[in-house]
Every structure is written in structure tokens, then in C-alpha cells.
Length: 200
Image (cartoon, rainbow, N blue to C red; front, top):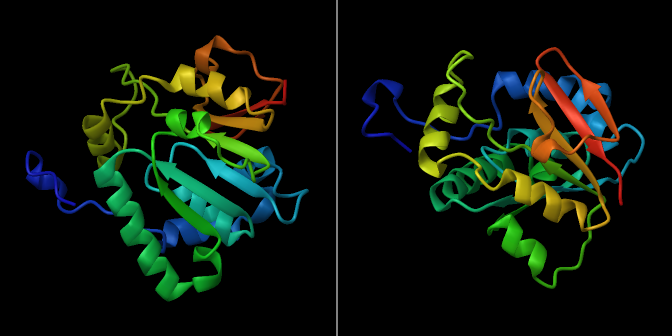
């Protein structure tokens, strides 16, 4: 994908086979993301990634052995995910086959009569642009422009918590809890925080 209004950015794509992601995968199941979701304790963990984005977390988790249902609602971003998935199948078929892509709005998907065949829900909503922090990556700037940001993130957290599944929310280190809901626990990394909400 190319952003015609930002020609200096060049092409934008979802790359699951980058050296950066290889390093993340090499970090194993003790890294904060995997620990927050419980992958270090549960071997065959089933994860619902409810805010797909470019799929980097989903690919990391699948490469570490989890089964991931990845939901993305924006059609252009979903096409990027399909492209990344097809290239991943050619390179690492076993991990790629542990990811299922779904083009849907997660709020609508929660309301549908879906079998809840997952153990934990992961939310990584876009953090609002506060004009105070450094600019995010070029890809994230374009995603924010495409989607207008995740303005319904608070509602999504409330919906996720009605599923009686554990919910993990990825947040910037100093950001307030999503929807003002204090988590039951949190796992900190250098720049990020993973807020954990246990089944109600």
C-alpha cells in the first residue's frame, strides 16, 4: 500500500518476517507480551487478537506456539494482513497456520453467536495523538489517518469483559487505564504496560 499524500513514506506493508520480529520471537515465552497472555504457563493457548493492526503481536504469539484469531475491521488494513499471511505461509507454514484472519468489526463479532473458542482476549487500541510524544512509526501514522484512531476503544473493553474471558490491554507505559478501568494486575516493560483484567 502507498499513501499518495505522503510520497516520502514509500510503500507500507505488514512484514511478519522482518529481523525485528525475529528478535522478538527469539525472546521466547518469558517476554512481557507472552507472560501477560499466559503463554508461558499454558502450552496450547488460544488468543483472540481483537484489534489486528499490522498483526505483529499475533505473528509473534503464533510463532511461540499459540493459536490466534485475528480480527481487523478496516478493509485496506485487512488486505495488508492477508498479504503478510500469504508470505508467512510460504516461509513458516506451521506458525502461519495457527493464525485465522477475520474481517469484521469486533464489537459486532462479539454480539454474534460465535463459539468462544479462545482463552484470552488481547486489545491493543491506538493511543490518541497527544502532540506531546514523538511521532509513531510511518506505518502507525498512516493507520491512524486511515481509521481516525480507535475512538470506540473504551466500548470494546467493556464488551470484551462481558465474555468471561481474561482480557489483556496493551498500553503506553504512562497512559491511564483504558476506559478508566483499574486492572487486576499489570506487567511492565520498558515502554509498554500490559493491563490484566480477570473474568468478572
